[in-house]
Figure 1 (spheres, one colour):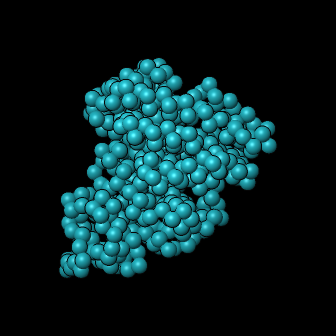
Figure 2: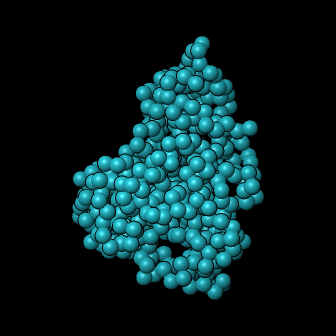
Figure 3: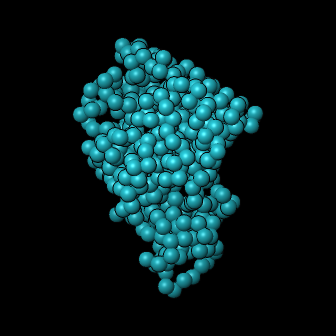
Length: 425
Protein backbone atom coordinates (compact mmCIF):
# COMPACT_ATOMS: atom_id res chain seq x y z
CA UNK A 1 0.00 0.00 0.00
CA UNK A 2 2.12 2.87 -1.32
CA UNK A 3 -0.24 5.80 -0.70
CA UNK A 4 -2.98 6.42 1.85
CA UNK A 5 -5.13 9.55 1.98
CA UNK A 6 -6.89 10.22 5.27
CA UNK A 7 -9.77 12.60 4.54
CA UNK A 8 -12.05 14.85 6.61
CA UNK A 9 -10.60 14.15 10.06
CA UNK A 10 -9.82 16.51 12.90
CA UNK A 11 -6.03 16.52 12.89
CA UNK A 12 -4.32 17.19 16.22
CA UNK A 13 -0.56 17.54 15.79
CA UNK A 14 0.74 19.36 18.89
CA UNK A 15 4.32 19.77 17.67
CA UNK A 16 3.18 21.65 14.58
CA UNK A 17 0.36 23.55 16.28
CA UNK A 18 -2.37 21.92 14.19
CA UNK A 19 -5.86 21.34 15.55
CA UNK A 20 -8.50 21.43 12.84
CA UNK A 21 -9.99 19.71 9.84
CA UNK A 22 -7.20 18.51 7.57
CA UNK A 23 -6.35 15.70 5.19
CA UNK A 24 -3.20 13.62 5.60
CA UNK A 25 -1.40 12.08 2.64
CA UNK A 26 0.94 9.17 3.29
CA UNK A 27 3.35 8.10 0.57
CA UNK A 28 5.81 5.19 0.68
CA UNK A 29 5.83 4.98 4.46
CA UNK A 30 6.25 8.66 5.31
CA UNK A 31 4.03 11.69 5.79
CA UNK A 32 3.89 13.55 2.48
CA UNK A 33 1.45 16.35 3.26
CA UNK A 34 -1.03 17.65 5.83
CA UNK A 35 -3.40 20.19 4.36
CA UNK A 36 -7.00 21.04 3.55
CA UNK A 37 -8.78 19.24 0.73
CA UNK A 38 -5.97 17.04 -0.54
CA UNK A 39 -6.56 14.74 -3.50
CA UNK A 40 -4.60 11.75 -4.79
CA UNK A 41 -6.14 9.42 -7.37
CA UNK A 42 -3.77 6.53 -6.70
CA UNK A 43 -4.19 6.57 -2.90
CA UNK A 44 -6.32 4.30 -0.74
CA UNK A 45 -8.78 6.66 0.95
CA UNK A 46 -9.75 6.49 4.63
CA UNK A 47 -12.75 8.66 5.48
CA UNK A 48 -12.09 10.06 8.98
CA UNK A 49 -15.22 12.21 9.18
CA UNK A 50 -16.07 12.63 12.87
CA UNK A 51 -12.75 11.09 13.92
CA UNK A 52 -9.51 12.47 15.36
CA UNK A 53 -6.22 11.93 13.54
CA UNK A 54 -3.00 12.19 15.55
CA UNK A 55 0.61 11.09 15.37
CA UNK A 56 1.00 7.46 16.41
CA UNK A 57 1.08 7.04 20.18
CA UNK A 58 4.42 6.12 21.78
CA UNK A 59 4.63 4.10 24.99
CA UNK A 60 7.87 4.65 26.90
CA UNK A 61 7.37 1.73 29.25
CA UNK A 62 6.26 -1.82 28.46
CA UNK A 63 7.21 -5.31 29.57
CA UNK A 64 6.88 -7.72 26.65
CA UNK A 65 8.50 -10.52 28.67
CA UNK A 66 10.55 -11.96 25.82
CA UNK A 67 13.01 -13.64 26.11
CA UNK A 68 12.36 -15.84 29.12
CA UNK A 69 8.76 -15.27 30.17
CA UNK A 70 6.86 -15.97 26.97
CA UNK A 71 4.05 -17.63 28.93
CA UNK A 72 3.09 -14.13 30.14
CA UNK A 73 3.47 -12.19 26.86
CA UNK A 74 5.57 -12.18 23.70
CA UNK A 75 6.78 -9.35 21.53
CA UNK A 76 4.25 -10.44 18.91
CA UNK A 77 1.23 -10.50 21.24
CA UNK A 78 2.34 -7.36 23.04
CA UNK A 79 2.64 -5.51 19.74
CA UNK A 80 -0.87 -6.60 18.76
CA UNK A 81 -2.16 -5.17 22.04
CA UNK A 82 -0.20 -1.99 21.38
CA UNK A 83 -1.67 -1.25 17.96
CA UNK A 84 -5.18 -2.09 19.19
CA UNK A 85 -4.63 0.65 21.76
CA UNK A 86 -3.32 3.13 19.19
CA UNK A 87 0.38 2.75 20.00
CA UNK A 88 2.72 2.66 17.03
CA UNK A 89 5.98 2.50 19.03
CA UNK A 90 6.85 0.95 22.37
CA UNK A 91 9.96 0.84 24.53
CA UNK A 92 10.61 -2.51 26.23
CA UNK A 93 12.13 -2.85 29.68
CA UNK A 94 15.15 -5.13 30.15
CA UNK A 95 13.92 -7.32 33.03
CA UNK A 96 13.74 -10.37 30.80
CA UNK A 97 15.55 -13.70 31.26
CA UNK A 98 18.38 -13.15 30.57
CA UNK A 99 18.29 -9.43 31.25
CA UNK A 100 19.11 -7.16 28.32
CA UNK A 101 22.65 -6.53 29.57
CA UNK A 102 24.59 -7.76 26.53
CA UNK A 103 24.70 -6.99 22.80
CA UNK A 104 23.62 -10.57 22.11
CA UNK A 105 20.38 -10.32 24.09
CA UNK A 106 19.63 -6.89 22.68
CA UNK A 107 20.16 -8.26 19.17
CA UNK A 108 17.75 -11.10 19.96
CA UNK A 109 15.04 -8.66 21.05
CA UNK A 110 15.51 -6.59 17.91
CA UNK A 111 15.36 -9.75 15.77
CA UNK A 112 12.13 -10.88 17.43
CA UNK A 113 10.68 -7.43 16.85
CA UNK A 114 11.23 -7.46 13.09
CA UNK A 115 7.80 -8.97 12.39
CA UNK A 116 5.91 -7.12 15.14
CA UNK A 117 2.93 -4.95 14.24
CA UNK A 118 4.46 -1.86 15.88
CA UNK A 119 7.95 -0.43 16.26
CA UNK A 120 9.62 -2.15 19.21
CA UNK A 121 12.59 -0.48 20.91
CA UNK A 122 14.42 -1.45 24.08
CA UNK A 123 16.25 -0.05 27.04
CA UNK A 124 19.29 -2.00 28.22
CA UNK A 125 19.83 -2.79 31.87
CA UNK A 126 21.90 -0.29 33.79
CA UNK A 127 23.71 -3.01 35.74
CA UNK A 128 24.86 -6.52 34.87
CA UNK A 129 22.02 -9.03 35.35
CA UNK A 130 20.13 -6.14 36.97
CA UNK A 131 21.89 -6.99 40.22
CA UNK A 132 22.93 -3.42 41.02
CA UNK A 133 26.62 -4.24 41.40
CA UNK A 134 28.37 -3.31 38.14
CA UNK A 135 27.36 -1.02 35.28
CA UNK A 136 26.80 -2.54 31.86
CA UNK A 137 28.82 -1.40 28.84
CA UNK A 138 26.72 1.65 28.00
CA UNK A 139 28.67 2.61 24.87
CA UNK A 140 28.49 -0.82 23.25
CA UNK A 141 24.80 -1.31 24.07
CA UNK A 142 23.95 2.15 22.79
CA UNK A 143 25.77 1.40 19.55
CA UNK A 144 23.60 -1.72 19.25
CA UNK A 145 20.41 0.34 19.59
CA UNK A 146 19.64 0.69 23.30
CA UNK A 147 17.69 3.92 23.82
CA UNK A 148 18.81 4.32 27.42
CA UNK A 149 19.57 2.38 30.59
CA UNK A 150 17.44 1.16 33.48
CA UNK A 151 17.07 -1.56 36.06
CA UNK A 152 13.28 -1.15 35.97
CA UNK A 153 11.51 -3.86 37.85
CA UNK A 154 13.95 -2.89 40.56
CA UNK A 155 15.92 0.19 41.55
CA UNK A 156 19.65 0.85 41.44
CA UNK A 157 20.17 1.23 45.18
CA UNK A 158 23.84 2.22 44.93
CA UNK A 159 23.98 5.98 44.41
CA UNK A 160 27.53 5.87 43.11
CA UNK A 161 26.45 3.62 40.23
CA UNK A 162 23.64 6.03 39.34
CA UNK A 163 26.16 8.89 39.42
CA UNK A 164 28.59 7.05 37.15
CA UNK A 165 25.74 5.90 34.92
CA UNK A 166 24.49 9.46 34.46
CA UNK A 167 27.97 10.58 33.44
CA UNK A 168 28.30 7.72 30.95
CA UNK A 169 24.81 8.22 29.51
CA UNK A 170 25.43 11.97 29.20
CA UNK A 171 28.33 11.26 26.85
CA UNK A 172 25.97 9.22 24.67
CA UNK A 173 23.08 11.70 24.80
CA UNK A 174 20.62 9.21 26.31
CA UNK A 175 18.71 9.02 29.61
CA UNK A 176 19.18 6.95 32.71
CA UNK A 177 15.67 5.71 33.46
CA UNK A 178 14.77 5.08 37.08
CA UNK A 179 12.15 3.07 38.90
CA UNK A 180 12.35 4.91 42.21
CA UNK A 181 11.88 2.81 45.35
CA UNK A 182 14.19 2.53 48.35
CA UNK A 183 14.28 -1.18 49.18
CA UNK A 184 14.73 -0.41 52.86
CA UNK A 185 11.11 0.77 52.94
CA UNK A 186 9.56 -1.93 50.75
CA UNK A 187 8.37 -4.14 53.63
CA UNK A 188 6.07 -6.83 52.15
CA UNK A 189 6.06 -5.16 48.69
CA UNK A 190 2.27 -5.28 48.64
CA UNK A 191 0.19 -2.11 48.46
CA UNK A 192 0.34 1.47 49.70
CA UNK A 193 0.98 1.78 53.41
CA UNK A 194 -2.16 3.42 54.74
CA UNK A 195 -5.79 2.80 55.59
CA UNK A 196 -6.33 0.01 53.08
CA UNK A 197 -3.16 -1.89 53.99
CA UNK A 198 -4.11 -1.69 57.66
CA UNK A 199 -7.58 -2.97 56.83
CA UNK A 200 -6.11 -5.91 54.91
CA UNK A 201 -3.39 -6.67 57.44
CA UNK A 202 -0.50 -5.80 55.12
CA UNK A 203 2.62 -3.85 56.09
CA UNK A 204 2.46 -1.91 52.84
CA UNK A 205 4.90 0.38 51.05
CA UNK A 206 5.04 4.03 52.20
CA UNK A 207 5.37 6.90 49.75
CA UNK A 208 8.72 7.83 51.26
CA UNK A 209 10.21 4.77 49.51
CA UNK A 210 9.68 6.59 46.21
CA UNK A 211 10.36 10.11 47.44
CA UNK A 212 13.85 9.33 48.78
CA UNK A 213 15.10 7.85 45.51
CA UNK A 214 13.54 10.65 43.46
CA UNK A 215 15.30 13.17 45.72
CA UNK A 216 18.62 11.32 45.38
CA UNK A 217 18.39 10.97 41.62
CA UNK A 218 17.42 14.61 41.08
CA UNK A 219 20.48 15.65 43.07
CA UNK A 220 22.74 13.33 41.07
CA UNK A 221 21.29 14.61 37.79
CA UNK A 222 21.87 18.17 38.96
CA UNK A 223 25.49 17.40 39.87
CA UNK A 224 26.28 15.55 36.63
CA UNK A 225 24.10 17.35 34.10
CA UNK A 226 22.91 13.93 32.94
CA UNK A 227 19.35 13.23 31.83
CA UNK A 228 17.34 11.36 34.45
CA UNK A 229 13.92 10.03 33.48
CA UNK A 230 11.71 9.14 36.43
CA UNK A 231 9.19 6.38 35.80
CA UNK A 232 5.59 5.99 36.99
CA UNK A 233 5.26 8.79 39.55
CA UNK A 234 2.83 7.86 42.31
CA UNK A 235 3.28 10.33 45.20
CA UNK A 236 2.45 13.98 45.63
CA UNK A 237 5.91 14.69 47.02
CA UNK A 238 7.64 13.21 43.97
CA UNK A 239 5.62 15.47 41.70
CA UNK A 240 6.56 18.49 43.82
CA UNK A 241 10.24 17.54 43.91
CA UNK A 242 10.37 17.26 40.13
CA UNK A 243 8.49 20.52 39.68
CA UNK A 244 11.06 22.36 41.78
CA UNK A 245 13.97 20.57 40.09
CA UNK A 246 12.74 21.66 36.67
CA UNK A 247 12.61 25.25 37.88
CA UNK A 248 16.31 24.90 38.81
CA UNK A 249 17.13 23.61 35.34
CA UNK A 250 17.74 19.98 36.26
CA UNK A 251 17.70 17.71 33.20
CA UNK A 252 14.76 15.60 34.34
CA UNK A 253 11.75 14.14 32.58
CA UNK A 254 9.05 11.95 34.04
CA UNK A 255 6.04 9.81 33.25
CA UNK A 256 2.78 8.82 34.89
CA UNK A 257 0.67 5.73 34.27
CA UNK A 258 -3.07 5.71 33.59
CA UNK A 259 -3.65 3.70 36.76
CA UNK A 260 -1.97 6.32 38.91
CA UNK A 261 -4.13 9.12 37.49
CA UNK A 262 -7.37 7.12 37.56
CA UNK A 263 -7.35 4.93 40.68
CA UNK A 264 -6.50 5.14 44.38
CA UNK A 265 -5.57 2.48 46.93
CA UNK A 266 -9.27 1.77 47.55
CA UNK A 267 -9.39 -0.11 44.22
CA UNK A 268 -7.50 -2.93 45.93
CA UNK A 269 -10.53 -3.67 48.11
CA UNK A 270 -12.58 -4.56 45.03
CA UNK A 271 -9.96 -5.78 42.57
CA UNK A 272 -7.44 -7.45 44.87
CA UNK A 273 -4.10 -8.33 43.28
CA UNK A 274 -5.30 -7.10 39.88
CA UNK A 275 -4.87 -3.62 41.38
CA UNK A 276 -1.40 -4.41 42.73
CA UNK A 277 1.64 -2.87 41.07
CA UNK A 278 4.93 -1.21 41.94
CA UNK A 279 4.78 1.60 42.89
CA UNK A 280 1.34 0.98 44.36
CA UNK A 281 -1.85 2.95 43.97
CA UNK A 282 -1.77 5.77 46.50
CA UNK A 283 -4.23 8.19 48.11
CA UNK A 284 -6.64 10.73 46.64
CA UNK A 285 -4.21 13.48 47.70
CA UNK A 286 -1.48 11.86 45.62
CA UNK A 287 -3.77 11.49 42.63
CA UNK A 288 -4.87 15.13 42.90
CA UNK A 289 -1.24 16.31 42.79
CA UNK A 290 -0.60 14.10 39.76
CA UNK A 291 -3.48 15.82 37.96
CA UNK A 292 -1.99 19.21 38.86
CA UNK A 293 1.37 18.00 37.55
CA UNK A 294 -0.22 17.00 34.26
CA UNK A 295 -1.98 20.34 33.95
CA UNK A 296 1.06 22.49 34.73
CA UNK A 297 3.51 20.53 32.58
CA UNK A 298 5.56 19.00 35.39
CA UNK A 299 4.70 15.54 34.08
CA UNK A 300 6.00 14.96 30.57
CA UNK A 301 4.53 11.69 29.40
CA UNK A 302 1.87 9.06 29.86
CA UNK A 303 3.31 5.52 29.87
CA UNK A 304 1.45 2.30 30.56
CA UNK A 305 3.98 0.13 32.43
CA UNK A 306 2.19 -2.73 30.64
CA UNK A 307 3.14 -5.69 32.86
CA UNK A 308 1.49 -9.00 31.96
CA UNK A 309 1.11 -11.86 34.44
CA UNK A 310 -0.94 -15.06 34.40
CA UNK A 311 -4.17 -15.49 36.33
CA UNK A 312 -2.50 -18.23 38.37
CA UNK A 313 0.26 -15.86 39.45
CA UNK A 314 -2.16 -13.11 40.39
CA UNK A 315 -4.31 -15.60 42.30
CA UNK A 316 -1.54 -15.81 44.92
CA UNK A 317 -2.97 -12.67 46.50
CA UNK A 318 -1.97 -9.20 47.60
CA UNK A 319 1.33 -10.12 49.26
CA UNK A 320 2.54 -13.12 47.24
CA UNK A 321 1.12 -12.19 43.84
CA UNK A 322 3.41 -10.33 41.42
CA UNK A 323 3.29 -6.58 40.87
CA UNK A 324 1.95 -5.16 37.63
CA UNK A 325 -1.08 -4.72 35.40
CA UNK A 326 -1.59 -4.57 31.65
CA UNK A 327 -2.49 -1.23 30.11
CA UNK A 328 -1.90 -0.88 26.38
CA UNK A 329 -5.52 -1.45 25.36
CA UNK A 330 -7.07 0.83 27.98
CA UNK A 331 -4.56 3.70 28.20
CA UNK A 332 -6.02 5.99 25.55
CA UNK A 333 -9.57 5.48 26.78
CA UNK A 334 -8.51 6.21 30.35
CA UNK A 335 -6.62 9.34 29.30
CA UNK A 336 -9.57 10.70 27.35
CA UNK A 337 -12.11 9.71 30.02
CA UNK A 338 -10.24 10.71 33.16
CA UNK A 339 -8.08 13.59 31.96
CA UNK A 340 -10.18 15.16 29.20
CA UNK A 341 -13.76 14.43 30.23
CA UNK A 342 -13.37 14.49 34.02
CA UNK A 343 -10.59 17.02 34.57
CA UNK A 344 -10.95 19.21 31.48
CA UNK A 345 -7.40 18.71 30.22
CA UNK A 346 -7.15 19.65 26.55
CA UNK A 347 -6.61 17.12 23.79
CA UNK A 348 -3.48 18.95 22.65
CA UNK A 349 -1.89 18.38 26.06
CA UNK A 350 -2.96 14.74 26.20
CA UNK A 351 -1.50 13.92 22.78
CA UNK A 352 1.61 15.91 23.63
CA UNK A 353 2.14 13.45 26.50
CA UNK A 354 1.35 10.44 24.31
CA UNK A 355 3.21 11.44 21.13
CA UNK A 356 5.50 14.47 21.15
CA UNK A 357 7.21 14.17 24.52
CA UNK A 358 7.85 10.40 24.47
CA UNK A 359 9.61 10.80 21.12
CA UNK A 360 11.73 13.64 22.48
CA UNK A 361 12.64 11.82 25.70
CA UNK A 362 13.89 8.74 23.84
CA UNK A 363 15.32 10.57 20.80
CA UNK A 364 12.91 8.79 18.46
CA UNK A 365 11.61 9.76 15.07
CA UNK A 366 7.86 10.24 15.02
CA UNK A 367 5.64 11.99 17.52
CA UNK A 368 4.40 14.40 14.84
CA UNK A 369 2.82 14.53 11.39
CA UNK A 370 5.64 16.63 9.96
CA UNK A 371 6.21 15.85 6.25
CA UNK A 372 9.11 13.45 5.93
CA UNK A 373 8.46 11.81 9.30
CA UNK A 374 7.51 8.12 9.49
CA UNK A 375 3.85 7.59 8.64
CA UNK A 376 2.81 6.43 12.11
CA UNK A 377 -0.77 7.57 12.63
CA UNK A 378 -3.55 6.85 15.11
CA UNK A 379 -7.19 7.49 14.23
CA UNK A 380 -9.45 7.75 17.27
CA UNK A 381 -13.16 8.12 17.89
CA UNK A 382 -12.92 10.35 20.95
CA UNK A 383 -16.69 10.14 21.48
CA UNK A 384 -16.97 6.36 21.31
CA UNK A 385 -18.28 4.90 24.56
CA UNK A 386 -17.23 1.35 25.27
CA UNK A 387 -17.04 -1.12 28.12
CA UNK A 388 -13.75 -2.77 29.05
CA UNK A 389 -13.96 -6.52 28.47
CA UNK A 390 -10.74 -8.36 29.11
CA UNK A 391 -11.74 -11.40 27.05
CA UNK A 392 -11.56 -9.18 23.95
CA UNK A 393 -7.97 -8.09 24.57
CA UNK A 394 -5.13 -8.95 22.20
CA UNK A 395 -2.64 -9.27 25.06
CA UNK A 396 -2.02 -12.75 26.43
CA UNK A 397 -2.70 -11.43 29.91
CA UNK A 398 -5.88 -10.32 31.69
CA UNK A 399 -4.49 -8.76 34.87
CA UNK A 400 -6.04 -5.32 35.22
CA UNK A 401 -8.58 -3.58 37.48
CA UNK A 402 -10.85 -2.04 34.82
CA UNK A 403 -13.16 -4.90 33.86
CA UNK A 404 -16.67 -3.56 33.23
CA UNK A 405 -15.62 0.09 33.35
CA UNK A 406 -17.18 2.39 30.75
CA UNK A 407 -14.66 4.54 28.90
CA UNK A 408 -15.00 7.24 26.26
CA UNK A 409 -12.54 7.26 23.38
CA UNK A 410 -11.32 4.32 21.32
CA UNK A 411 -8.79 3.59 18.60
CA UNK A 412 -10.38 2.99 15.20
CA UNK A 413 -7.33 2.58 12.95
CA UNK A 414 -3.58 2.36 13.55
CA UNK A 415 -1.01 2.92 10.81
CA UNK A 416 2.69 2.08 11.18
CA UNK A 417 5.12 3.08 8.47
CA UNK A 418 2.30 3.63 6.02
CA UNK A 419 0.81 0.19 6.69
CA UNK A 420 -2.60 -0.32 8.29
CA UNK A 421 -1.85 -2.68 11.18
CA UNK A 422 -5.11 -2.37 13.10
CA UNK A 423 -8.64 -1.58 12.01
CA UNK A 424 -11.58 -1.93 14.35
CA UNK A 425 -14.07 -4.48 13.10
